[in-house]
Length: 357
Image (cartoon, rainbow, N blue to C red; front, side, top):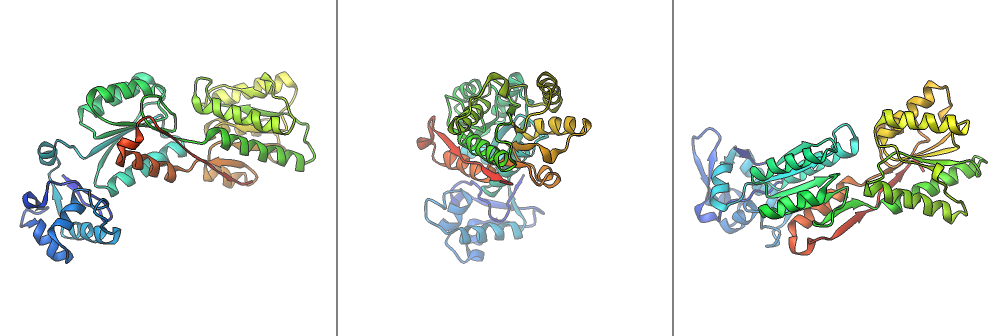
């Protein structure tokens, strides 16, 4: 059974057929009853419940009042019956690569909140950056007849797009782009360029403009990493600085791998760089751990991270971070869901915000 929540939308059959069932089965509420309670027309109530109220220019205030009344009266709808009647499940799916990262957990939370507001139920699956797990999760969600599938950080988004196309289900890519479905991603190159410039400014202000800056973390086959490296190089080039192969260390995202790779770098060059561009808070964990174990003063090294975590910012107030705009990205996702004809294979980029600069 699906329960209304205030501020959400639900999709029902047209109002002459609709009956809402009380949780305690003591009474039955029709569209006409709810219209009387809301001091509105049955057609307006029906539009709110079937999710078409925005096209009819019904106000958010009125839609919220109608749904709040339904919630207050304790009524729900049989989702299986609705799916059979309208050939719609009211379910949307999302795959995410991991949960132990504030960025991806925030994405899942914001996605679920917005889906719930629209009267939709969500299925979210963590796939551990494993393409086989991604395909299996997609297969299961399609079996549950999801109405849309959002692939977040997928390693093989086009393979999932093909599966969805065969099933007649729209899909979208989030965080990492694909070529066979619309994508909503961060403006990685521009964000990295701005973060690198901030790092170089901080070095110059400390009187160490010639000290090396190391880009560390990420995967070479990853679109976002490639774009961030390009932004890193472009920012340095704008300051008249060359970027050698030793200035970019692609070692994966895992904290332990970043720690080992950084240790090798320091031992090879005889000391840490003047500044670090760290590609995710997961890699940041490994870097900071190594620096503390070796007794280095974190304030003596300029740190910038393309990711955001409030705890990291609190523990290191001078840490600069590129905070990806999750609310705006989720908003763009649902805009594309609402207007599939305009989506096609469109790519939308959302600029991150620099924190601590």
